[in-house]
Length: 175
Picture 1: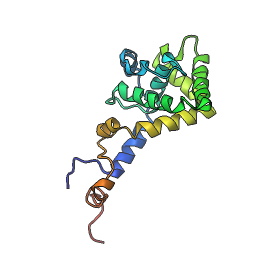
Picture 2: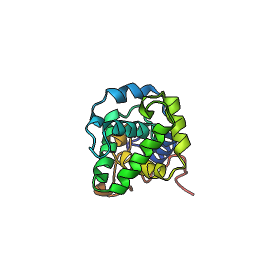
Picture 3: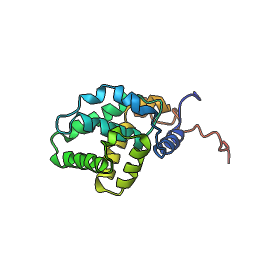
Picture 4: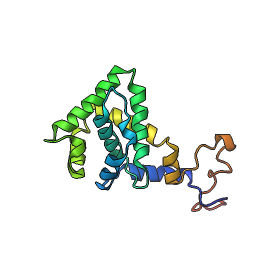
């Protein structure tokens, strides 16, 4: 068996550990420089799409994941909400709430203030909706799978029996 592949257990532990971290401000400059998020849906606006991409990075920080992946996740959400006025209103409410806590736009303030603003609104109903939408799309992205070493689905390869199901190295073989 190939020990380089990540097991299902290691993937879950990594995903849980990484989802609880708060990113530093190192990616802000890269996100502003990236152009993928700038082609967002007209319903939400380019600045708001950038703010949502930044929110996605703060919620699910992975230093090795390119900003284009976060932008693609937001684009996917915006595409899905183009015909859903209720979700568009949820996204707008999130941007308004984040911006209301600052003198400047939320996207323009330092990372510490962005995190504080997110913590201030995490009890709002829109926060959980956005967090779930980002999580579902982010951890189903092939680039994220490659980054964390997840080999992907095993259904098309005959299941996990030969691809990581039996690779528990700490459990004795015989009882």
